[in-house]
Length: 49
Image (tube, rainbow, N blue to C red; front, side, top):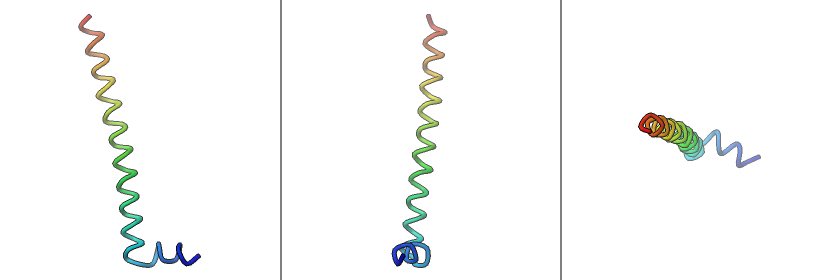
């Protein structure tokens, strides 16, 4: 219980939550970005020939 209390009530705990949230957000963004680029590339390859 002390760990959860520290996570939400201390500055280092809040920075940890912010860092984890930021990294998860970046992972989602990169996944969607690369999938979109792969689909665009696939469509361009099909259009060529």
